[in-house]
Amino acid sequence: EEISLNIQKMVHIGGWEFEFKSGITRWTEGQYGIHQIPIGTSVDFYQTFSYFAPHEQGRIKSLLNHCQQTGIIFDDEFEFIDAKKEHKWLRVRGIPIFNEDGEVSGLRGMMQDVTYSKKKSIGFMEIQDKLKLIMETTPAATYECLVNKNWTMTFMSSHIEEITGYKSEDFIHDSKVSYGSIIYQDDQNMVSDVVLAGVKNKKLYNIEYRINHKLGEVR
Image (cartoon, rainbow, N blue to C red):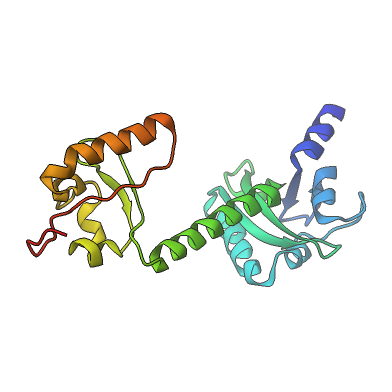
């Protein structure tokens, strides 16, 4: 039991159980810790919904009701506000308890505080969004490509259309045209040598070369 309690504290996890007929609610110490409620405090299962962020309460109630009615397990993440008004992200898992007649007589499950990993994930997505905005608003084409003969693009900003006449999606995975094919033939070896040297030596490079525009012009 002591090992179990220590593990709960380490991974910020708590367990809960609720019997429909008796209305009895049981919590582990970890569950009290997540809610920031003194251990042993009498709790009402349905009142605990109030700790979920207002816009999440309908969703958690719906999932619990669906679990009760269908016997299907649920597992999802929710915004949560504990008794000390600390905002958290919780992973909540609910499992039906069946009686001898095969009916759902209660629910049990776990809650895990995933605030740290969630904030890291949200922060990463925000950085990605900012980078995308910068790429789309910078008056130059930004890209990511494979080092191969075609310089196959995995990402290309929309500004490439102003430069080449081709839409960015035309280059992605060589869907309509490869970037390598629009490099002016006399410049292709030079471009390859400079880029490969930069990749090999892990150094920045600066290169000027000609391309074949979609309109048939050399630029």
